[in-house]
Image (cartoon, rainbow, N blue to C red; front, side, top):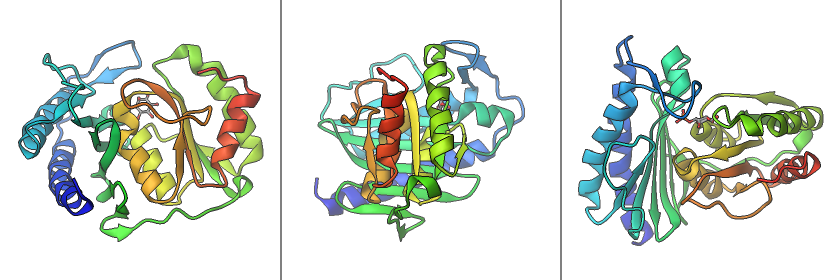
Length: 268
Ligand code: LIP
C-alpha cells in the first residue's frame, strides 16, 4: 500500500475510532466492571462492546487482515497475517471506570510486522491523533512536529505497570532518578495518550517497563512520525508480537530514559 492508500484507510479508521469514542461518552454508570489478570487489571462491558464494534467496522476495510484486540472474545486473532489490526478499545480502563476522563481508543495497523497506520482518539478532549508511515503525524488534521527540549526542561510521563508488581521497584527507582534529572513527573494511566502527549510536545518523554502491543502500537508510530524516538528500554526495536518495555521521547530526552534504566539495573 502506498501513502495515499494508507491515508485513505486512516480516514476510515478515524471514523470508526470517533464512533467508538462516542460509545465511551455514552456509557452508563453501571459499567459491569470485572478483573482479568489480577485485582488491578480491570475490564468493563464497554471494553468488550467497543472491541466487537471495532472488529465489525474495521475488518470489512481489509478482509484479509487479522485483528489483535486487548479483550479475548473467543476467536482467533490471526496474528500471522500480513495485515494486522492491533486494537485497544479503551486504553485507560481504570480511568474510565473511575470517571477520570483520561482514556482513548487506540487502533494500529501493522503490515508484515511494521506499523503502517496509527490512530488514537481521545473523546473527552475531541483529539484525533493520526499517523501514516512515511506520511507524518497529525492532531485534528494539523501536522505534529515534536519540539526538542533538554531533559532538565522536560515533563516525564511515567507508566507504573500496575499489572506487573515485579516491576514496581525498578519503575519507581527510575522515576526517582528522572524526577531529579528532569522538570517533573506525570502519570496519566493511558499509555496511548502518554505517547500522543510526547508527540504533541506536552511532555519530553514517557516510559513504562512493560506494555502490551495494543497499548503502544498506534501511539508509537505517532511519536515516530512526529519526529520522536521510540524503542524498548535498552534502545532496541519494539516487538509488536509481544509485551515489551517502551521508551519514547524527543531526540534530546529519549537517551535520559535509557540511562535511567541502565542506572537502575533494568533487565527487561
Ligand atoms: C493501561 C495502560 C497504562 C498501563 C496499564 C494498562 P489498559 O492500558 O494504558 O499505561 O500502566 O497497566 O496497560 O489496560 O487500560 O488498556
